[in-house]
Image (cartoon, rainbow, N blue to C red; front, side, top):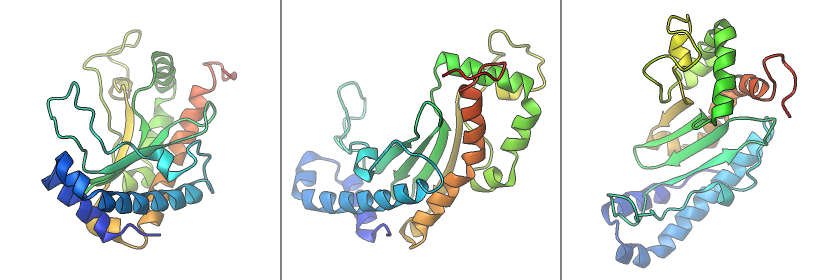
Length: 226
């Protein structure tokens, strides 16, 4: 299953004509492009469930709305010219999430932990403080570096409360998000093997997800939290 060229063409045209009248006149193009993306995502979910356990059951379920909520936005454009969404893993035992954006010249996938709650963030930092060497080994692994490069995410400017400013892993302890991204060109997006490339990319983060799932489902003594 491949994404069709007309899907990207529709998104390009929508970006140039971001108004309700044009969208209404081209609604059939939108529905055709949306169905192409849904079928692509349905097949991707099948492939991912061969090595992971997803809570998201269908491509349609995974998609975000294309309509913008303009009530409190400075940009009043009614549509967001991309097909984007996420796949949820089966919680509480499987942590982390997968995200995707199909957008001309800006397509990418991402995965990780965007907004961990306070309890989870503290548990992650406690593990970093004790096990920073395994963390560095994991983040510098060939699979992660080749697919994503360095970990990204918002950070605080100083040491988090309860942790020393001179801790040898202070650079990791400052993270509030634990995030990885990979960009794809339009040519890659339209290639026949794009679905395999995404699946392979997401599979590369599994060692990190497995480690984080273990951390977030146990306490400091290694006992189950759930």
